[in-house]
Amino acid sequence: MSEAFYTDKVAVRAAFDKAASTYDAAAVLQREVVQRMAERLDYIRIKPERMLDAGSGTGFACPILRERYPEGRLIELDLAPGMLRIAREQRGGGGIKAMFDRRKPVQVCGDLEALPLASNSVDLIWSSLALQWCNVPDAAFAEMLRVLKPGGLLMFSTLGPDTLKELRSAFASVDGYTHVNQFIDMHDLGDALVNSGFATPVMDMEHITLTYPELKPILADLKGIGAHNATRGRRSGMMGKTAWQRVVANYEQFRRDGELPATYEVVYGHAWKPEIMPARTLADGSQVIEFRPRAR
Image (cartoon, rainbow, N blue to C red; front, side):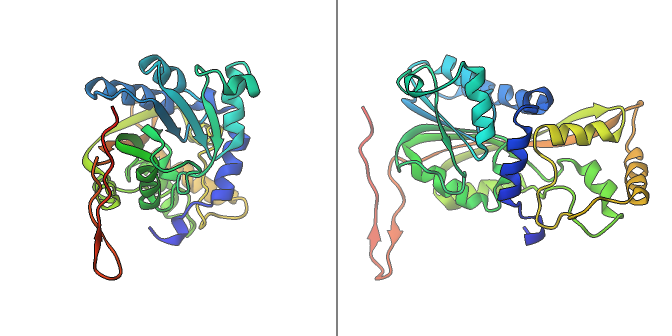
């Protein structure tokens, strides 16, 4: 990924903080993907004592995970403190009392690429539509592997290269700035999982298309969830009227049956942390094999 397409983490945090109060009203896709991820758990046997929702947003996955795993303690982690605040308020607040209530999640503000959690501390990492904000998903996978216990499960969803392809095409001939994030191919994500040390990765993908009467509501929904352009190569000022009219005209080419489409390529994946980690080779050529007994 070129540096022009790297996300500005400060801008991402600020955007999601600002959008926290409007997020739920606009997060149609996000809610649907969480539900489809939850259905995938039907085929996986796991009984986690501690779960991490990595990129938890306003906490939509919380009741789903709590109902499925009532004995597990949930940790919600998000880059934006505003998202955590909204989630907390929707559940009736927080405070010291909530910290000792196992029915309510513990909240942590942090970055997926530098998780503020102890190694080998969680049994399940759930991450829905958050990895696409990481500039180096390999770093996020390495951190997830670190905090998972041996035998722990990572389940995630993210966005693939076809996401917002209509919007990308509409802007392409207008100027030289980046207007849409660059998303990583499913196969590259699978390779990154293996390279990070995860075992038996399973990947699949589907396209979900939302339809709108015109372009402005598409951009309004993206802004409403805090997902507007946060790439380093973005325009710093306002777009001129003539350029905007060209973008609108370009997007109109995609109109079908009276509606404008907004396509999302949703990538799903899950993988396990091995019970016995592969050997690591040290500088002197010797090998270290990490082994931990299976939890009973």
